[in-house]
Amino acid sequence: MARHFCLDIGGTYIKLATGDDDGLEEVDAIATPADRASFLDRTAGLLVAAGIAPPDRLGVSIAGSIDADSGSVDAAQLPQLAGTDFASDLASEIGKHIGASLLHRVSVENDANCFALAEAHFGAGREFDNVFAIILGTGVGGGQVWRGDLVRGFGGAAGEWGHGPFVQKQDPLNEAYIPQFTCGCGLTGCIDTVGGARGMESIHAAAGNTLIDSKAIVAGWLDGDQSCNTTISSYVGVVSDALAVAANVTGAGIIPVGGGLSNAAELLTAIDREVQRKVLKPRPGRLVVKGQTGHNGGLWGIHAQLMREGQRGAEGQH
Image 1: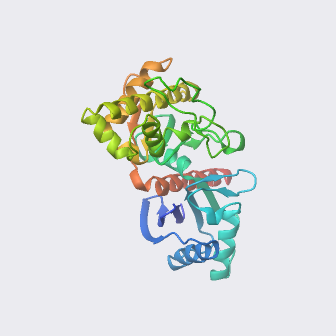
Image 2 (image 1 turned 120 degrees about the horizontal axis):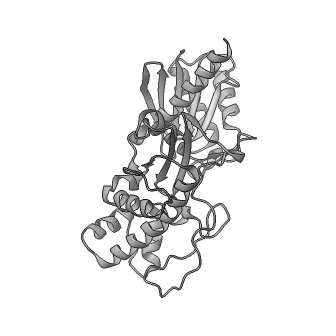
Image 3 (image 1 turned 90 degrees about the horizontal axis):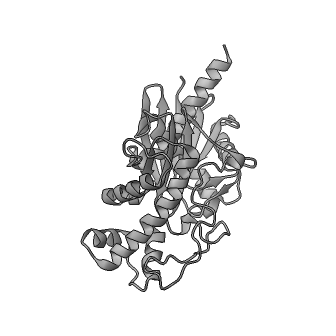
């Protein structure tokens, strides 16, 4: 298969790698520019310096959601890209530099889908047909891969387990009280508002505790601090409720976890124990596990996507 280029775009850095049948090689990284014009110019410059030219393909993992019909990006971490058809804009910008068009040779996926692809092809899910991978980072995200291919669903929203009014009204005097927070999607009580690091911190503060970060809450829990114990109990309870439903609906054989909270091994063990208790068909081994592709999940995932697209293209020529 011909060489292709892979970008992982986050709010802080843009990472570039090249890929082919032999794997993936990281090339360079730059700080993410704050304005749209600089963003497109510097990203295109990064690719041109690495030698991109037709018929090369470019895959992009991006920290945000992509509208399946318009290609527009909705990313809180990347406001400079809001509402734009990023794939077309970047292809046009590269064309200005090299004097040739890459239009229709740029693929864009959100970072959760790319993490799911990475884990299904190269990580904890590589021995499984059905992988549902999740992000427990600042917020939550997810993606499903069936036999190597993304499950996209209507509007490309399959795997978005973080949205929907899951947290119900509760008695504030309940020890395990979790408030209903308004989500960026417009609903109230989404898992995205409580399932990530900021959500854990919000649960802790809502109980009248001093606002501390998620690392301190987990550390306090491990040290036996009562307030942190209560927070983690509430957090694990609500996350495992939603994840057990997701496991039942998807039928996933494994759930790899990425994001900052995946580094807390004991927390994942607690979540796995509760999910296994709540699913209809408990799995014979661990269901919720730490992902294996780490900070490069975006690059490995979009690499996997381009490899699959290349394979389908080759099959279509025979």
